Length: 218
Image (cartoon, rainbow, N blue to C red):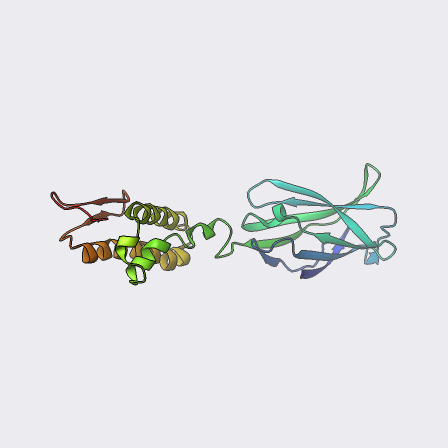
């Protein structure tokens, strides 16, 4: 399933296309149906090769080859590569028509905005980082059946994951606070089920510290 955007691109005059938006989690699904014109007349693309050049928001470039769908009517199709919308921000682009190795024509620029998805590939690190802790908290698994080292390690991974999402305020507030709260509740569950009077959890250093003379029974 494609997200299809219709564009009319001029070779000489300014193109009057609105800035469109895409998500950086759209996987190979953004299709641009382009009509190339010269002075409002359709430009003949017969026998020509179409290439897309994108100047991304971080200053890097994408260069890809695309296909002509109706040469006489100046129509071509561009399927944006993943690299063309991986980085969030404002991108500028243009189409170039080639005959052999020579550039025949270049369109005026068009622009699009890439939005960062809430659950992009990088953010999904925090998913399911506390399975053991959660099971212990809700009491579905007796603590004697939970490996404490695994619990501590999963808690540590959860805190690391929470730090990775701090650049997104809303997501960090919801997801980051949630995984931290789950980790801390897991430690409280340990004290409750094992009879330890006091367990200190240092969330900054991701370590459990037991008072002198206390130990966790396995």
